[in-house]
Length: 268
Length: 332
Image (cartoon, rainbow over all chains, first blue to last red; front, side, top):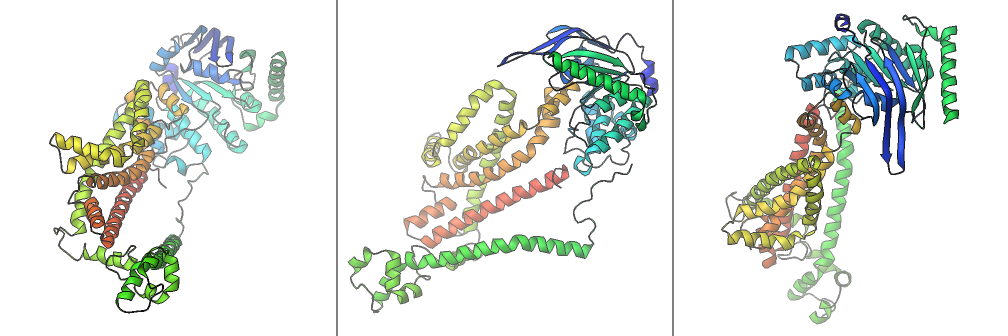
């Protein structure tokens, strides 16, 4: 997996947004969901988006996925426009809820994107097996989702997003519905997954410790209109045991994120 | 990984324990059901006394007994309860064994049901199995057509805004017309173009059964939430793939709920279709003939035959549902 990730030539930024604007027209008038968003994400980065609700972090992710169409500015994913990037299977998307089909086994759920994308039977089998191993769910292929805990279901949904081997993983508060103990463990596993696969991660969260613990770059956003108020490059090393959260650096970054959030709220 | 899958209920219990568990579960279900049935039958027997009182008192008078009041004209204007209270002896003794009672007793209906099913050749013109089969064949034909039509309409409604706006209101309007009013017209119109027998009844059955299927399937096909649909969009799934892989499987529990209503409605449609032509075959014909000749026992037994048939049809669909949903992993 690492080989494929590094095999492709890194032609510029994975995600590049320039003066990106998105206005929703609602019955209560226009809502400025994104205003003049400029951001470049390089290959292999782990970028977290943090901010209060309504700051446009999820909207930005949906724009990257081509699920929303920006009303102004430019956005490229792997050098393509988001729609073309989607057709080129540039990314896997992990939603807030695991959203596994209850009538499919765990293996069947991971096979779903492979069926739609038309992989061969042999390839499907291999990829289901490999991705299950990647998220530590070997042996659960023939279980139904209701037989798994919430944390395991979310791991299965990550496996589903990884199965077709996209270089970019978009995650929208994937652990938001889980309790803190499970969330800590999944954060740790996500980091090791990231280290093993070398994928580029875009990760939406509303938890400051989660953002600081995971990211190489933290994008702080603020609402009304949704915009970027601070971008923080993390000085933390790539190896991050859970107790790094008690270190000086960690606390300093968390403090700066908190300041950024507060400044954004006051300006709004 | 320390996680283990949640164990199935009763998984840790041995075989004998499981049987005991099942018995307790079954007993827990059967006892209340039997209690209600016993109460209904008791109520039915009690109701027979005042309902049949006029006839009972008349019979007693003819056999020379003393009854009050003595004048038949006076009795005619009395209520059944008052008459039973003033003539408790005759009212009680003759209430449950009349030839043409106003309300036949449960055992009379049961005996008639037994005689006209197990008691005679199924090909006999008096056999309820013969009449039941006539009605059942029209019911099943109508149910199949109605279900197919309902599913097709639902697929169209979900995928086309034009159909959603145009078909749904008419489907609702179609069900506000009393079936008893439209059934004769369907029969007459089809007869005039040379169609008779099973087909007109099947048309009425289909007319009644397509509607719950449309409503249930539309709801079922629309049941996947926005996130599920977005997920498929991120895979670049086509409309067809979204339908076969998401919408259709998600709609199956809804479909089966509708099918259970639909099959019962189909049976009613077939029976109603037998009434206006004065048909000589079918459960509807039995009901009609019974009311022509005041054969209340025959009416009630045909009625129960229809109810039992409906219950069996619904149970068969419920069985298929359980089997299918379990295979799909939807039932636990």
